[in-house]
Image 1: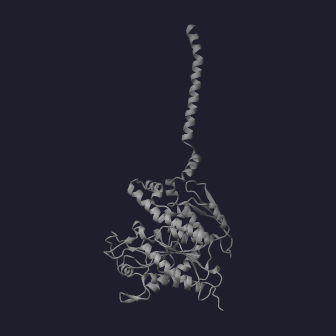
Image 2 (image 1 turned 180 degrees about the vertical axis):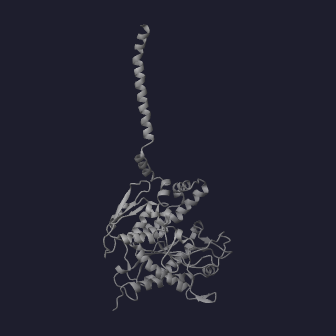
Image 3 (image 1 turned 120 degrees about the vertical axis):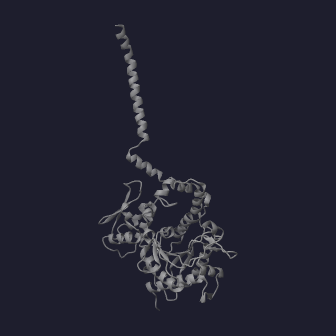
Amino acid sequence: MLESGHSRKLYPIIALLLVLLVITGAYIITLETQRKPDASGQQQESASLQTTPREDVSILADLGEEPNWSSLDLWQDTITRDDFYYLLTEVYTTDDTWKRYISIHEDHAIIRTDRTQPGATYRLNFASVISEASPDRNWNSVGELPPGTKDKPLAGVHIAIDPGHIGGDYAKLEERWFQIGDNPPVQEGDMTLLTARIIKNQLIKLGAKVYLIRGSNTPVNPKRPDDYLEEATAKALALGKDDEKTISYYQNKFFYRTGEIRERARRVNLAFNPDLVLCLHYNAEAWGDPLKPELSDKNHYHVLLHGALTSNEIAHDDERYEMLIKILQRSHEEEKALGMYMAQSFAAITKLPAYEYTDANNRAIKADEVPGLWMRNLLANRIYQCPVIFLEPYVMNSREVHDRIQMGDYKGTRPVNGEQKLSIYREYAEAVVAALRQYYLDYRIIYQP
C-alpha cells in the first residue's frame, strides 16, 4: 500500500516531465525547420543573395546591373518568329546553349529572367506579320533620315566616337603602353584620341553632328581602383583565389576597363542618343615586356559587329537581356550594312590583309563572306544601345606601324617603305570617313536640286 501511494504521488511529476519533453521537442523541430527551409524557401534565399557581390559575379557580367525585364514590353508583337529565330541563332549566339534560357513557341518566346529561379520568366509575343513601322528606339536608321545632299550626305546624322582606352598617365595601368629604347612610348589611348579628333572634323564637314565620348586622356569613370575593392574581392573569391595580387588586378581592371566602358555607355544612352557609335582601337600582337617589347611582322585589320555570345555569356541574366534589346531594336541590319562598307574601305585604303580568328567557333562569327568583318560580344558594342562599329586596324607593335607611329601626325604624305603615305592617323580617318560617306550616299535619299 505504501509503494502504491508513493507511485501515485509521482504521477504529476512524470506528467509534467512528459509535457516539458514534448514542448522541447517541438521547439527543436521549429528551429530545424527555420534553419533548413523547403525548396521554395531556398529559391527565395537564392534570389535575395543576387544582390551580394559574389552572386553577381556568376549571375551577372562584371559590374552588371539587374535587368528591368518589363522594359521589353515596348517590343511586344513587333518581331516575327522567323526574324527572332534567325537573329538569335545566326547572329547573336555561337551554339545552342540559348535553349537553356529561351524557349521558342509558335507565337511567343519564354525567356528566363533569373538563372537562380526556374519559374522566373518573361513572355515575348511575336508579330504575325512583318511590321512596316520601325521598332521603338532612340536612333535613326539610314532609311528613316530625311534627304541629304551630295555635299553633305551625313546631314543630321548623330555620331558618337569612342576613342578606345584612356592613355596619358593611365596607359601603363591599362597595359596599352610599350617603349623601344629612347623612342617616345606607344600609347593606344593617345593614338585613338588623336584619330577621333581628325575623324570628327571631317565628318562635321559632311554634315554630321559628332560627339567625342571622351575628349582628353582622363577617365570618364569617376571611380578609382580603391572603389572596387568589394567587387574585386568577390570576383577573386569566385575564381577560388583570395591573394592580394589577384584582387588588385581586378580592382584596376574594373576601374580602367569595365567601369570605364559602363560609364561611357551612360553618356551614349542617356545624353547623346546617337544613330551610330564608332569605337576606335589599334590592334596588337603580344609584345611581352613593355620595356623590351617584341616587334612583329604581322599587320592586319578587322571590323567587329555585336553578336556571338558564348555559352558562358548568355548564362548571365544581364547579357541575355542586353542581347534581346539588340535583337528587338534591329541593330544588326544597320551594323552589318555599315560594317561591310567599313571593312571594304580599310582593305582598299590601308592595303592590309584581313585578320582571321582561328578560334572563330568559340568567340566570333564571320559576317557572310566579307573579309575582315566579324561578330563578337564585346562590352561596348553590347551595351551601347544603337548600331556600333568596332574598329581594330593596324598592329601597333608591327615594325612598319611602330615606325609610322614614331613619325607622328603630319599633313600630306611622306615616304614609308618606298611609298608615299598619309600619317597613320589620317589614313585611319580616311578609311572611316570614306566608308561613311559612300554608305549614306548609296542608302540615303539624296536631294537633287
